[in-house]
Length: 135
Image (tube, rainbow, N blue to C red):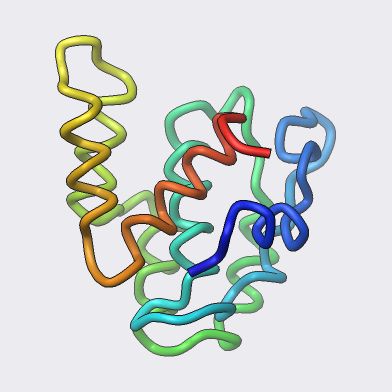
């Protein structure tokens, strides 16, 4: 699993909210442990936030697509689907809860965090980082 500090040192912190340049997250493709490497899960969380708030978040999708070979097959499959806007169910439920006051946000976070060995926590790290909740 990537820690928040490890993610920050690897990610281009700050530039993700810069309207003039897209953040290149390709440096963490395939990085970390898990069936889907932690870096891939963090990227999926970031892509989820970008899909919700494209006016505030810009991720360099071309760079991600060009570097998919740096991860394993499950990671490539997850990243390809996410690049096309197709997210795992736990991520979709989290997105719905973030955007809807009627949804139970804490329940969606608990569900997402508990997904897989570390995938859900890593996805939530990507979401929190993109939303500016962690440094």
